[in-house]
Length: 119
Image 1 (cartoon, rainbow, N blue to C red):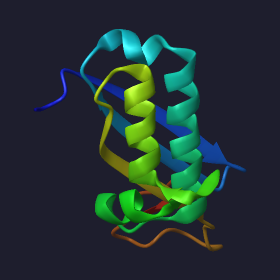
Image 2: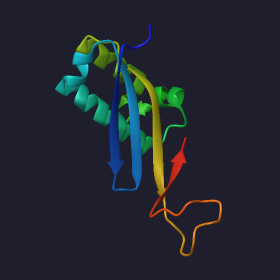
Image 3: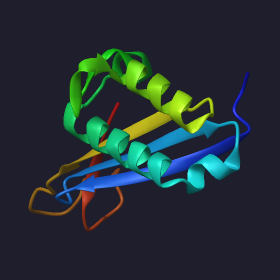
Image 4: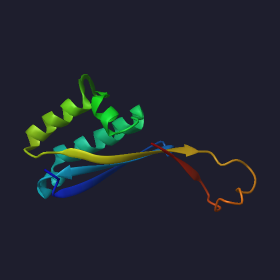
């Protein structure tokens, strides 16, 4: 069953790592719950800290706040608690790559800060 509602959570770590996580929810009211707000922020922080290669790898990782369970188990428990089928539809993680002195290469536009997309 595909999610009816999408919710995006962001997180930055020391201005060096940025994360966006998209969640799929059955009910829009879930996104307004404090428990879901904590869950989404915790997961975005987990991605920033653990750098999973892909969605499958993320779900198999031990959850950083409780290493006795995987992210998938933690998400399943949260889904049961919030009475919604919460899924992670996709995520992206960026890492700041310092700009080298000098002009940008000819094939790249000039930017103040370059971000390197990591998986």
